[in-house]
Length: 308
Image (cartoon, rainbow, N blue to C red; front, side):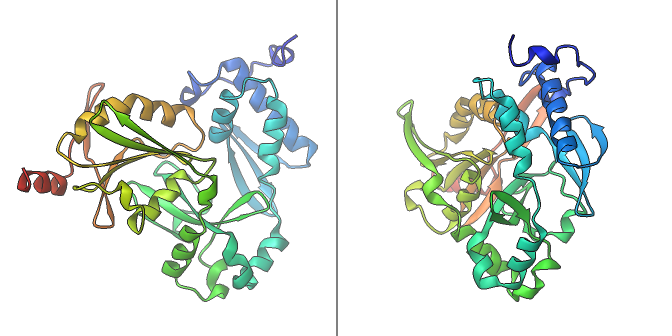
């Protein structure tokens, strides 16, 4: 009997459209039933079960526990150990209020745990984004200030951080410098003898690491800046722009970019960005029927024309 066989009769949950092609209905039901079992065993009251989420209350705070990253992680795991992965996933969400109360009272200690995470526009955070320390670096995304402590990501609220007596700019500078670069695997490829592509892979911080490109990594900066793609938190691509054929490169890498976005954990955006003079610009796009057309940013087009 396979590890999913015992759940074949429990098919009460429809497979959400966003997971089609990633897991089967049978596998989704296994995830949902195991998640419910976990919460019941740990004494969490489930107030709502919806497509791809469970709503519960922890420490007096309503939490929406989304399955998006979990489902993508499981889909890439073929050894049948899904139950343990699901339990480990929810264990990391356990909130330790006393520990975080201490961190908010001792900035010199807490500062070492500051990080940033980039999220797409569809990311929903409880109680409204305006209550959390965030900013926009890549258009149509949000960069959140977080504390990574004891295997948990804690999004920093503005009111809670007041005791630190630091400006948000100072906090972001510390957090970006804290990104664990030793966890990021970098590879370089010569594609079609025309393009040099750098890829960055990690568990959580490849997209965040791109924020360092504004101040360092000269090797990535071409004559006309850098093309950047951040499909997921753990997978990013960068290419120095040396001439005007950059749209050819986008056409080549776009299938892989979409595959990363739809299948890997922590998807962010399918947009492409131009890094120039320490600022990220969006490659505009328009969709007609099923066809998506990507265009050069106006300033990049003007720059290329002046140097043609």
